[in-house]
Image 1 (cartoon, rainbow, N blue to C red):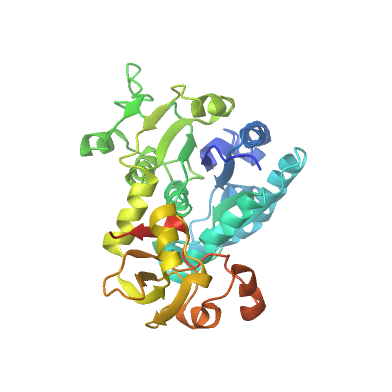
Image 2 (image 1 turned 90 degrees about the vertical axis):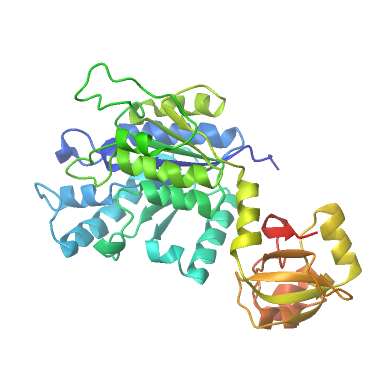
Length: 373
């Protein structure tokens, strides 16, 4: 099995996908170039996720409208029509390269509902394990105006955090972030590297997108702010330079790069340790404790002796040894307390036999496990 180099998320927006002459719908040459780049990155051992906009623009074209509808229902109808056409276009180009694709439609509500959040994460990771390209868009057909992501910039950052990506690449119609508006000031200078997004940096980004998009540089800066805060390096580059992305991953300076504040692992471990309140406990045997502390292993059901508390899948729980009062580890469980009562002490390959389903062979994966001593 090829070792994964990076998990990379590429976000492409409506202004990049839609040509100047909006009557043409989606610029298929952009999708063709992007599919070629994604194919190259995958062959290098990277895992890719594509976050896309463009459904509304395609729906508008299909309905022969002169502009995006003003009403929520009108926008939702255009999105519902355009989403099918958008995926047909992606299928055409990616299938030609032998890349299977999968559609995932998300709403902001899904990121605050624990079960939906976990299911989205696990589904995306499973698709990556199956070597499928997830193509993610906001579910515009059902999302209300008040809780929409916008032009999917923030969606791409939240998905990056959701699956702990290594790199987020946002394509736009500018070379990157300038110290002033390049459309108004011909002497505007491109800022190549940003170590920290300050209020001054945020003020440099102004304006919104085109008549078919709702984003702009400001929304991209906010997306970069979120992504870098959870350890994800973020790039803003011109959509017409997608062929340079493989060079970008090799360290070449293209567009504007926003440096991560900490590593992904550090941020996630800190979040588990300090932000999550434990909902229960599992008591494990000495062998499981030794495996976790000394060899960095995950917690398996075979090592669990007892469960206390009533908790659901995705909850934080403490891990203790049989003769201890204080936990030596804490993590996010893949199984609820009622499920653990049925599979405790069993081998991982017996989980599905007992439950009739499985969320994986681990109770707490090592990536979601923090040592407290």
